[in-house]
Amino acid sequence: MPYVTRDEKGYIVTVSDHQTALESEQLPYGHPEVQEFLLQNRPDDVHGALAQSDAAMSRIIEDLIDVLVKKNIINFTDLPLPAQKKLVSRQNLRRDLSALTNLVSDQDDIL
Picture (cartoon, rainbow, N blue to C red):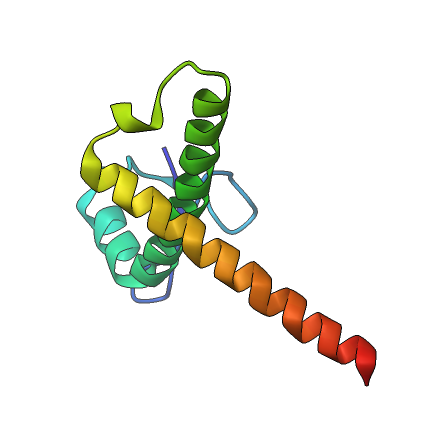
């Protein structure tokens, strides 16, 4: 259960997993006031963290598929056609980005 700190009007101003000198009241995560606080004060942080996590997981899954294909555990053609197209598209984008990065860094060396 999280610990909460309230302001002088009784509104929750912080929620923490650990008790500190300020947080002394403990409420369940499902408590309406805790839910309201989390929804009003953290949606961008949570959505941002999820987006970053999704991007990282996407890369992990791509790498996992590459390993499974290289070890002949699965065939690339075993994947559904839409998945194959997305993977090839991402591989091409990464290859193009790598080529651009190399081009820029090569030009910097010349100057």
